[in-house]
Image (tube, rainbow, N blue to C red):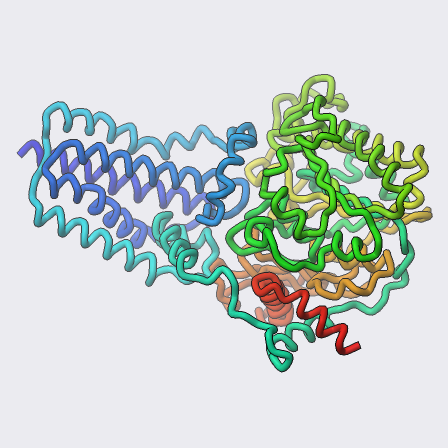
Length: 621
C-alpha cells in the first residue's frame, strides 16, 4: 500500500507544481491564465512522466521522470528570463544561438528575481520523495495502467497543442491559454512542417503575384523631399547606440546633463523624438538588419540566421554600387548573432571586430573592446578610406550593455545618493559614458576634416532598462516607463553643412532610416523598402511584428493595440493625441498597412525576389 501512497504523492506534487508554475508565469506576463487548460496540460505531463515507472515497476525510472521534469522546469524558467528581456518565449530556431548565453552571463543574472524561488518549490519537495522511493524501493508495477497513462498523456498533449492554440495568438496568450509545453509543441509543429522558403515566385514574366509585389514597392515610395540629395556623394557613418532610450536626451539630474554631446548634436541635426525600435528575436542584430534593409526580420529567429544568404538591396549594397567602400564594426566576437556569416550577403566589404588583425583589442570594457577604443581606431580607418573615395561605415556600439556596470574611473556622473546601488543610476552612468565617447568621436572627425564630408546618423537599437524598473524610474527621474516609452529610441541625422537643427515629432520606426538616408544622398535606386523618408513630411506611422501583439501600430491620428488573440475586432483603437477609445474600424487602414508591410517583407526575403524585382523595374524604364 505504501508504494501507492508514494506514487500518488509524487504525482500530486508534479500536477500541482506544474499547474502553479504555468499559471504564475501567465499572470506575470499577461495578467491572466486559463487554469482549466493549464491543469489539463499538467495532467498530461504527470501521466507521461509516471507512465514509464508504472510500466516497468523499477525505481530507476523515477530518476528518469525527475530528470525530465527538471528539464521542462528549466525550459519554463528559460522562458521566464527570455520573456523578461525580449517579451517573447524561446523557439527552436534560436537553438543555434544558445552558445551566446555565456557571453552575456552578467546580463542574464540581472534578470533573476528573489521571487523566482517559487519556481523551485516543487523540485525541492520532489527530491526527498525521490530519495525515499529509491531507498525503500517503492515502485508500482502495472504494465497496462502504465501504458494507458502514456497513451492518454500523449493524446492530451496533442489535443491541447493542436486544438486550443491558434497561430495568430501572441506568445504570451499561448502560454496563458494552455501553458508552456503546449505553446512550445504548437510552435514546434510549425517549425518542422513549414517550408523555410515560401512557394517559388517570379520565375515567369507573367507572374501576376510578382507584378503585385513590384507594384506595392513602387506605390510605397515617397515624393521627393525638400532635402533630397543634400548629402550627395558624401561619406556615411551610422552609429547604432546600444540600449539607448530616448528619454535621456535633454535630461538633467540636479542640473547636470546626462547627454551633453547628443544635446549639442540635436542643435544642428534632424532630431526625431518619436522613433520606435522594431527588433525581433535577433535583438541588436535585428536592429542592424531592419535599418540597412528597411524590411522586417523573421517571425521566430533573427534576421541574420533566417536570411544569412540571399539577394538583398541593403544600404551597403546600394552604396557599393555607387562606388562607396563599405564596412561594419563591432568590438565583440564576430560569430555573435551570426554576423560573420551574414555580413557578406548584406554587402559589407570589411568587418572590423574583436578578432580582426587590424584592430587593437587590448582595451576591453564589458562584453568586448571599449567604445572609446573602437571610435578612435575607426577614425584612423576613415582617414585612409577617404583617400580612395566615399565610404560607408556602420558601427554597433557595445559598452552600454546590460547590466550597465562600469569601473569607477569610467563613471563620469556625480549622482546624488538616492541613485546609489540602483539600476537607474547604473544606466545613467552607462549612458553618460556612451555620450562622452560619442563626443570624442565627433570631435576627432572634425579635427581630421571628415565631419563636413560625412552624413552622420545616430540611433538607439532598443530599450535599456526593463519594465520592472518603471517605479524606480518614476521615483528617481520622473519618467513614466510604459510600453510606448520603453520602445522609444532617439534618431539624430546630421548632413554636411547643416547649421540649424530641427526637432521632429513625426512618428516612425527603424524601417524608415534607410529610405531617409538614401533620400538625403540623392539615391533613387533603393525602391525595395517598406519604410518612408522621414524628411518627406508625410504622416507618421510605425507598426510592430514583435514586442507588442503583432500588428499593433502608432499613427499620427489613431493608434491600435492588437488583442493578444490576434483578432482585429477585439483590439483597441484610440486617438493618438488624447488616448480616447474609439470604434476599432477607425484603425482598419493602419492595421492593413502594417499587415502589408510584414507580408511584403516576408515575400521578398523568403523567395529571394529582390533581384527579379529589380530586373522588372529596369525593363519597365
